[in-house]
Length: 218
Image (cartoon, rainbow, N blue to C red):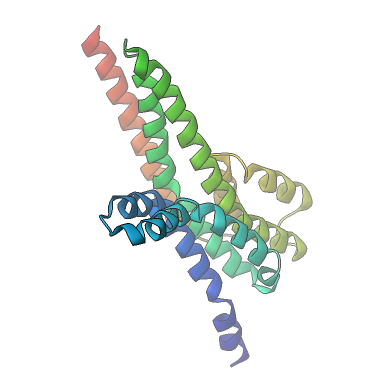
């Protein structure tokens, strides 16, 4: 009975992590949609306020995540923290793949012999990189809370905890380090290996496609 009550008390963290992943994928579209609404003049100010709110919602949630995870989150059990970390980190993988593609596309556009695109391409690449990093920063509280909890419970050593904690602030390495910790605990093995297989397949397909394109051009 006590175990069930404890689970119910910590289920809110799953909702928090799911909301963050959903917002990461939708905030720009929701903000843009609100901006496009044709409303009476007396509602324009409210429309702009809502559009601005959704545009900055990832930053707002980032602050909320840090406050919650390092206060109330300390009471959440280690397994739940790992589950939420995996949910957030793995859930954002497609987001960063898409972001990388868009950044590369912007950089390629900068080589178009048009003065306007030469400046717009790098500028958009920087903007997208900043957005991606802000989303990354907002996901850090979940993984850091998990790493700290694991260290205190003696599951992971001090050196490993420090290294993986630092890596949470860098692209790609944050996900890889969480994969290592999850596999070390012998948890989420099937999902982790499935994602690794899919990413490797995607990398091979893109690499082969790139070389085929180069040979076709030259």
